[in-house]
Image (spheres, rainbow, N blue to C red):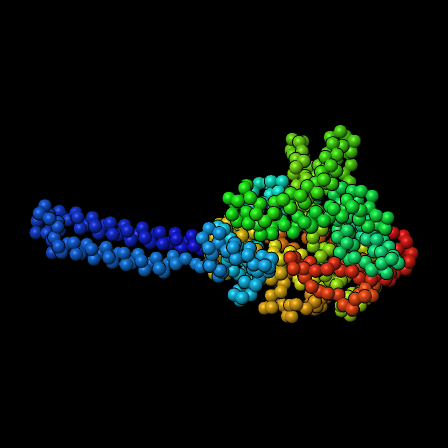
Length: 573
């Protein structure tokens, strides 16, 4: 908008000067007629039928030169274009794609190394014909998501997002427009509202109880020595919660005898994480669209189609059957979110959502629910096992607030500030993905003194914001106490100042903040209250190493669990 204003002023000034020049030219070529011929003849010797006077030509050219000089000075002062953020010099057509793809590192690690080498918190990388703008500065992130949110509220047209959303029928993946507005209203008012959150509390509590029972069975298993695969337990819990809230059932099949996931649930959750891994990964055809219908150069299309097919194999029959039951009148009471979505009506009584819209929105809900909580809790528990003092402080808080005679409930969570600080610190230090979902600019803009062209893809770095040494003291250290407030006020998992990015804000902000926060803290609290944790007998310390290809722990956390509550509590589950 700033550039547009400058151009308007420049255009106005140019018009004024050109009008003045035209008037001067007309004066030269149209001498004033008076009764006295001597007056009409000037010292400039105006043109006559015999030819143009040399003096006139010289004067007229001098005037043109002066006007041109004034225009040039004005142009230099007012329309010198703002520079793009710093970045590598791009190749013609392909931009910086070759350099990123030829490196042995994952693209997100190459981008962060590039920013470190340039000592820059915002850069511009041209991929194909797209300006990609990674950001690690909270101040600049606030400019994008708060001050100029309206300009940066769309989404890119990416192959994997298109496939997952069934042609952009959902919410988070869909570019700005009427479909996005419609589905956003559905989410905020019908699916993730405060009323709906309370309505579904019983289902979430049931799955939290099931989690404790499952981990208890694992801890008592003599064949494993009580060692629990924490990744399986946390992902299993999140999968159970969202399946129970959407479909009213924990398992697609029968599950395991110990309460663990069956083959069906393992395949379902694995496919969801596969989609998450490829949803906004750097796919060549996203930046060179001419290749999209001809070549699957990096194999992303095949992978995402297989993963979405695996999810649909379990979800779509449930949805189709439920729609049929409502149409036949054999189901009349709303019991879960699928019932809610099917029951939404237009003003004329027709269904508000098509079957494809329901299916697209449910797969998006599944992905959004299983991603953050298990990763944050697995990392937090790994860090805390290596620092037993942190475990002790968290369990002391749980014993003080809840006690040992009952299990922690959602109503207790607001008082568990240290437990929430552990979760928040894990979100900061160990985000599930390196970048937030891309924000696409719908108009030219100026941010941090740089020109951001229309169509740019802005990538707010969860990894970079949380690790920024200018913002965080000892950013690589796991220190939950940094999030505790001096006035002992409530610790929340979001950060309005964007010093870290656990849940997005603004027009594209996460509508499921309450659900995500509740699930994550409950998961952490139940594991800490119900069990004491230590390294397995054959291990001296948990390896806190990231995967080479992602931000997950390189090896799934295995830890020995010992029940710390009365036996009767576990047997009641």
